[in-house]
Length: 336
Image (cartoon, rainbow, N blue to C red):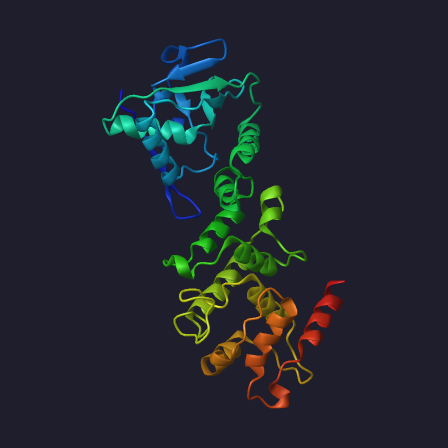
């Protein structure tokens, strides 16, 4: 039997994830017990993958993983490690908990005419109360096998989280530009998003992964974040226009400490004459003086000072922005 039902869906890293059989909307549900061979008291196997569902919210299929498993199957005569499936109360469907890449590999090999390979599995004894309970268990299990990264959590929440709109906006920001080298990493985007959302504490990837409800990203914060990224990408700080870069194709602003220093200067940078730090002026100054920029690495104060050195170059006193300690002290006094 050829398993032809597929679902593709855009994920945060830009891949199209391919599921063998994933949701009941586009296929005919079958009775899994009639399409499964019982090998022992708690081990089953099947070659009819219409009997298995890869639940929406599980980690997305990675093509490289499937390719590696397909090669292993062909080299080892179809021997596969057992997977695990589970049931939701009053549902009757088998959902793949661990083994979705193996299932997809078997389906692809059959579709390619390279053989029919069975997938064996255990069925979790306790049934789940809801889909959310099942997804939480999947995350827990996968973290012990191969840890979910921030992108895995994001992809899952974009599908099933109660505040999925915030997470969808985050995924859009992560892929705002066509060129991968122009897009920011997760940690920097989280920093920018939480800054414009008005969060008082830094939003780290660890916090993002550990608490699904801690991340908020409104439309207004999204627009401000997007605006900053677009301006950075078009500015004289971009690697294609700047005399100093982190490497050939990596702009100086693709660094957490640079972004944090820039956000602090934009928010707190003002002198005694009421002259404010602006991005347009920084852009103009970098166009003239980027060759003088000194990247200070992982040091907040030193990085902010490097930015101000370029910003203040050639300016008279009333147009200069205060030294680093003034900006930092102003920030601390406002956040107490």
